[in-house]
Image (cartoon, rainbow over all chains, first blue to last red; front, top):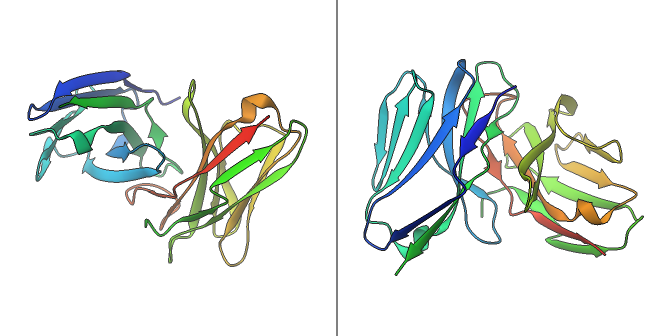
Length: 111
Length: 114
C-alpha cells in the first residue's frame, strides 16, 4: 500500500528557514498536500501541488517536488513562533478515495 | 472556522461504554472521512462516506461503525470502549469522492476512556 514518511521532529531558530521533508512510495500519486496542525486544532490545508509541477510558491511557503525520487519538501521562509505546529504531508492518486498521510513533523521554533 | 463541525469537543467515558461522535460537513461537500489520531500511531484513516454510501474503509475496528444521513451529517459510533481507544477523532469533508480537492478538517473530538 501507499507509504508516506516524514521525520518526526525539526527545530529552527526564529527568522531562519525551515525545510520539512517527505517521501512517498506511490508512483501514481497525482496530488501532494501539506497540512498544518496547531495544538488542540484540526488539520488545516496549507498548500498542494499537482504531480506535473516541480515547484509552487505561496508567500513564505515553497513546495518542491522531485517526482523521480518521490520526494516532497516544504520550505518556510523567515520562520516565526506562530509556525510551531505539526506538519503533515499527504498524497492521493487519480481515482483514489482518500488521502494518505505521513506521520507528521513537529516543528519547534526557538525564539 | 473551517465549516466542518464536530460535536462534542471533549468526551470522557468509562471502559465498556458506547459513544457517538457527530460531524456536519462543510456546506456543499458530499464526502465525509473519519480519522483517529493517537500519540503513538499518528493519523489513521477509519472510514469514508460519499453521499450516504460507504466508499472506503481503513483501519476501523469491528467495534466501531459509522453512517452518513440524508442531510449529509455523519456519526461515528464507538462501542465496548477500551483504554486504547482514547484519541482525537477527526472528521473531514470534501466536495468530490476522491482526489484533487483536498480535505477540510473539523477541530476534532477528544475522547478519553477511563
